Image (cartoon, rainbow, N blue to C red; front, top):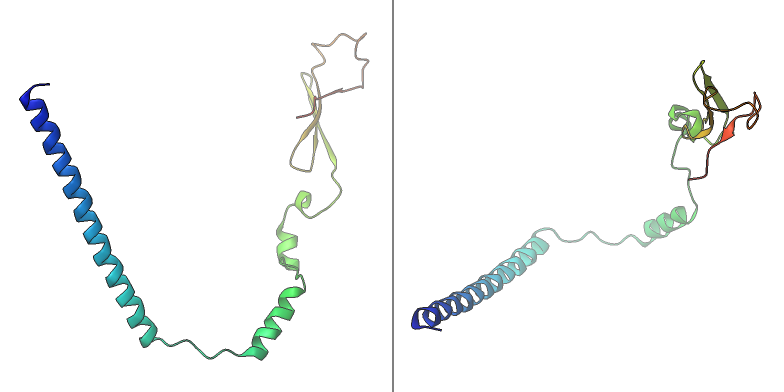
Length: 132
């Protein structure tokens, strides 16, 4: 290592130490200012007195699970999300036959009649999809 390399590393070390010292000092200033601001806010806005009767009533109401969705909100949901029984919807043309569930439009079965031999899959029987 020559003299220029040593000088460069020394300058980098000085920069690093000064950066750490400056950030530490400014962080302490910020914390003291933040504490003074929070104390001033607490003095300007005192806390309301605690109403124990109201707190007990709120705790009792929270203990009973409430229905979060009203009737109008439930009516606005699609039938698949209302807790109804899933139905099967069949879509077919001359090229493909598909069956979907109304619970999330999940495909139940599919068949491509031109690709299947009648011996393996008799007509009217759809080929089930593998599970996900």
